[in-house]
Length: 174
Image (cartoon, rainbow, N blue to C red; front, top):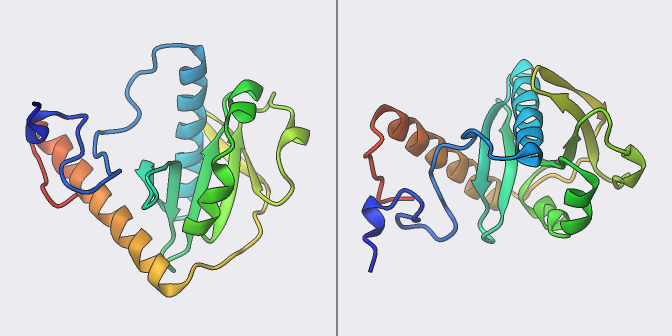
């Protein structure tokens, strides 16, 4: 049996919450493309004074590619699609709406935009930055769900920061 406290891939306490540092060097072209888009999305959201956490586990066990948190408490989820095959293979994205005020897709400039649903926002991004091409419809979270997501965001960010300072750090509360 593996001791979860020493296994960096294990969840040390909260189902579905994995606190590894996201964004490690990708192994292939599709992962490299997704990493470049993710970097651009994070830079774009930062330019709007939004804090971000990548690969944030959601309460339902799914994982959001990028979650942005604004100073006013607004929560965005950005679903990254690195290719048409990636988009077609993924049917879980509609369920992300339950955990954000606005849902966006982020793609590279050469992605066929007509494939993306009109009821989501659109970000075009590369490793240097990104731009909002279409705003996402607003569907404000209920106060209780907003609190859950804000706490999840804060706790994951704090655990990742501690882990960067001390790679052997294990936070039992996540």
